[in-house]
Each structure stands twice: as C-alpha cells, then as structure tokens.
Image (cartoon, rainbow, N blue to C red):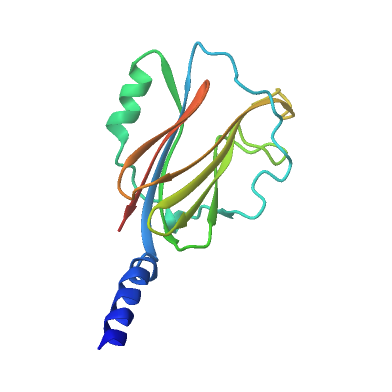
Length: 174
C-alpha cells in the first residue's frame, strides 16, 4: 500500500509537465518610446533568424490586443513597430519563431527578430529583436537591439522592457 501511495505522488508531480505540451496562441506587440534615444547600437547579424522557423500563413491568427495597440499609438508617446499573433505547439524543448515587418532588403527587414518559447510549469520566453535603419539602397546602416528573457504564467499579458524598446506578449492555451 505504501508503494501505491508513493507511485501516486510521483505521478502527480510529473503529470503537469507531461500534459503541458499542446497548441498555444501567442501574441506580440513590439513598441518604442518615441522621445527616447536608442539604448543599444548593435548591428543585426546576417543570420538573425538562424535556427528559427519562419511564421507561415496557416499559423497566423487574428490579433486580440488591437485596443491596447491602438492606445499605445494614440498616446503620442509610443509607436507600435510590430503586432503579430500566431499559434504554435509548445513543449519543454525551446521552439523559436522568426518574426519580421516591412520589406526585406538584402536579408534584413526594418523590424526583425525571434521569439523562443519553452513550456513546463511556466512558459520561458526569450525575445531577441532588432529595429534596423536601412539606407535608400537597402543597406543596413544601424540597428537597435532588444534582448529580454523571462518566465511567465500562461494566459497573462507580460511586459518586457529594454530602454527605448519594449514588448507585450501573451501566451495562452488554445
């Protein structure tokens, strides 16, 4: 009987991790504070999306934080640079997605970056974005980088700050 109780306790401890895998909805709003100078001047690497899968049309979803994005833009203090929503399967192994905005020129976009997500009891988020300035010929002049990592509860809207750039992200079970 004692063995049965011990086995039951062990199953209860490991069950949340085993059932955590699944399909999740992710929504990201990347924005900047207009009057703040760039916090970093770190050029975007040529392989900025290495190891990340590109977001395909089938995975994209309609955004649900439109009201919040509109308030940020209307404030006159902030400018929304990227607002995307998608679905993806999450597990304990990190899963990286490449996001971009604007027209690609010589392998770079005006806004480009990756979001890596791993799921256990909480969701581990690693965001790595560049806001690029390209010249008239499409050559990368300078970049501003945002790199943040955090651990969050699923379903909560999370704020990640990096000086003049910031991000709101929400990861919810579907």
